Length: 81
Image (cartoon, rainbow, N blue to C red; front, side, top):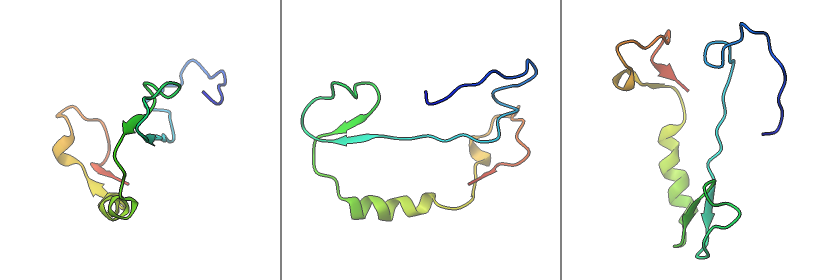
């Protein structure tokens, strides 16, 4: 947690929030995770950064997530960036 503030009682974490961000941590080493246990994914074998970058290119841009929406989804659009 980097920061916190007190908010009005009518603030809702899902509907009032204007953005979210996520960080995924990969520990590329053979040694077990100690300090990062539960907060990182350990991959013991060498990673191919160029192949990972190429594969990640399909994630960039706007995508239609209609297939993953529930019938009760309240989002205005299935499109996400």
